[in-house]
Image (cartoon, rainbow, N blue to C red; front, top):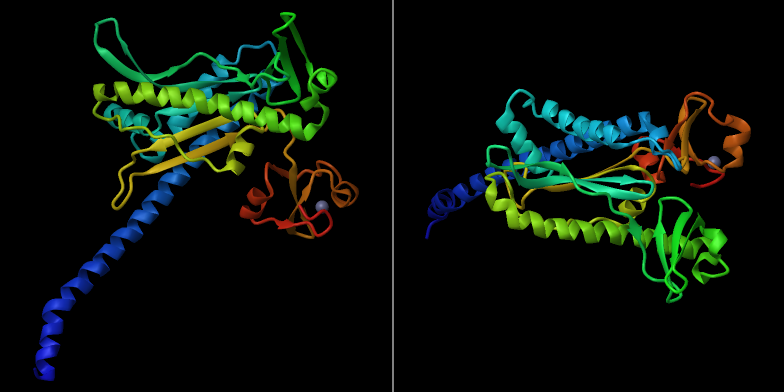
Length: 329
Ligand SMILES: [Zn+2]
């Protein structure tokens, strides 16, 4: 075969493939941008909701007797309003429903328990099946039985509720008050491991139950997709368990290529704990420190006006802050 024939062969056979791959590449790029856009829309909506919660922080602090249901309702509505505005569907009921089904589960994390705000199915007054978000009953953070007799209910903080199954006595207090009876509470580290596991497992258990329920009733709506248990990074779990806030699972936004869209987002309201990382300006340069850093407290001084708190050093770095060379946060 002559060289020109090879050239023609190349043009006839190979070129269309090059064109297709180029075209596919464009789709993949656009798909990546679309997914990143959804991520940011959901993250922003969760932050908006967390802001509402933090504005009403006093209702959620320990020992507050105020009813939190109105604030919780406002927070979830803020979340959805933010999504409707981002997708420009706030006057279109059908599209709004579609958006609602893309975020079927919101988990509201409170000091002494959590509640799901999730899609449920019920019959309305005209006997039609309706699928809408509803509040599920609040659940507590229950850990495993300790010393073979103590059933412990945890909170996001240091407070615990202990039920002694032998004497049937119910007790309440800081975990340190129980260290003589419960050896695991003798050190902060082992207490925190137990507490974080109890909170995480309580939420996971409830969420898994809900997923089963949702997948059974989803045939009642055209919008409902099969729900899967999301894989959450350990680091994000620790962040979620740190404070009152909202944990949101989103899925099923239309994509152009590849796997279906899934994303989870966390919005902590920083109600209970002062965040461990503080950001500030020093000679016009943004830095971040541990809140315990001597350099920060001596030179900058607490609350100098333009300080900002972060729950994690990664969060500070992402926002363009540099680590302090003294406390190496
Ligand atoms: Zn420092």
